[in-house]
Length: 102
Image 1: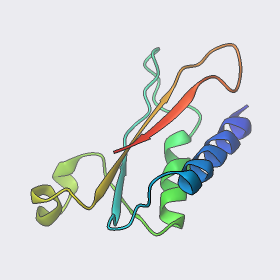
Image 2 (image 1 turned 90 degrees about the vertical axis):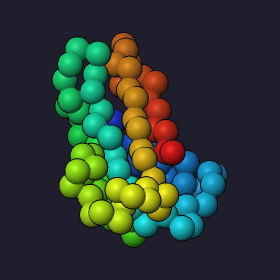
Image 3 (image 1 turned 45 degrees about the vertical axis):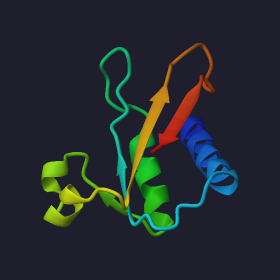
Image 4 (image 1 turned 60 degrees about the vertical axis):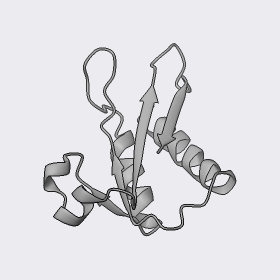
């Protein structure tokens, strides 16, 4: 099941990359933790899959806590993409999964 969700996430990311806006000018990305309604944090490894995909495409993955960023990025977060993911576990492996990039 974990492999199906990972594969689905990668396909979703690639599809979104092909048909979405260009990410020119962005150098960094923050992948926010995926927390489920039952309180578990990313049991399927979606966050690490997204981080690896962004790294593969040349982004520098930053820590979620802005206190760990350098001063320049804290003062001007414009070159940072923020990636939020949402997955509602349902009766199917392919339950609705959404990745929002801001």
